[in-house]
Length: 272
Image (cartoon, rainbow, N blue to C red; front, side, top):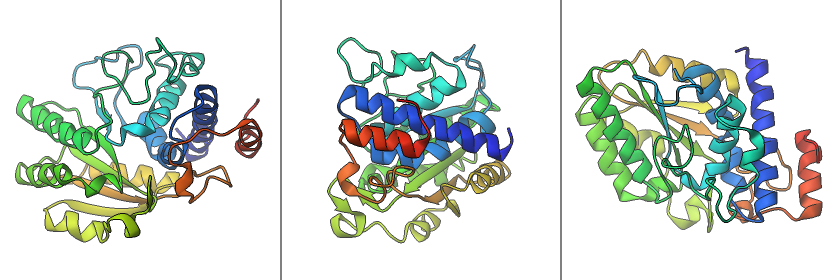
């Protein structure tokens, strides 16, 4: 897909994210919007998948380790054809399969139930190891939040991934600088992220996480790296695309009211 088309697709994903969270009256818009470009690039350009056959053998797998950004994955899966967009509008409602955090037993295309921070990344390492043992051609992709890497389980998994040479694993760190309680540097400093992963034996790249061309190029380059896993540190803006949400920790986990929703739709180019 052309870069311009990927950008248009990501814009539609952002519209669905905001609509679903508004309909739910709760959710996590900030981190969903910051990860939208990365997730769109993976599902529409990078990964070997088939919406008509979600369990295809040797498929590439994606794990959203920062599971609270589930609306971004749901919106992208819907855009990709796994299920109708209208279904995502039942987000967080009683009886809906679209829970606040992804559930692999309910939603096609979800490879791992996530939400407890760090555990999705650890599961990704296990999946990559399994693919290695099976000599599968598939690859594993995961997205972590920068606040998420404050969890110790992340570094245990990072150590194991490097030790076992899991070059079929590519991780993205959605580095927007904010978490639920404020700026990462104020809550628990995580920088320098690059040097930490390098010390654990990873191949490290740094990109603008909203530059679609850079995302695609980095993910493709990661496929060529042998003998070690790759982490792509993507500098992003929390709430990207909605001016009053951008770089605001307060929009980590709340839904817009009616006026805010209308303003967001106007800025994103979506229909009310």
